[in-house]
Image (cartoon, rainbow, N blue to C red):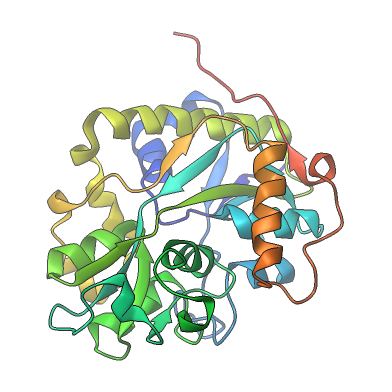
Length: 295
């Protein structure tokens, strides 16, 4: 049997697990593999209206990866893998504009193009967070500016007026003085490949549980790992001492209630033209017990 292939998702956990030897402690043979390169080798520059869901459609070549829970939900119900239902994550996210922008409040974003990842976390969470302030027709989303790091580059380079960002870019924009107009935090979920070894999945999440404890206790020891996934051009500018913990894994079930309510919310906003998949909750998930080390 080959190594368990992990696609890191711009968070600290996997890097801590490598540093601390947690994968070895749970007896997991693994390798890390970037799944979000474009055909030209550019990170997160996948083209117009190509986001997380489309990468599941075309097939991610790994045993486990992550995306926002809305997309993993629909992708799993459409037969593109299995949603890991024994845990989920919560990630800080926000809409940022240049420091000298005239946009100072959520209402000022009316009809302003906001760069988000198509059918990715920023797509859904931007709608969700702006609905208390703007009408549906005033929320103007741009899908042409790529995924996380590409959108960040476009904002830094003055190419776009407003961008939704999470993880390291969220903290980096704060460091550089960009204005956060609105918090848009959202849930993430893990996608498990159909042929993944569920014993390895258990071990993987057991290692992440240990890493989460480290982040909760001493985040400042690990924020330097954000550099590992950033574009090279920004690494010398980053002061990761200012960065926060980012995504937090919650070891609680992704329940049928969450599954159904999320699909209802997506359907009401017509985010998917081709339906949300026909598989039931039971058919869409895997729920192996999380591996725990005995001290």
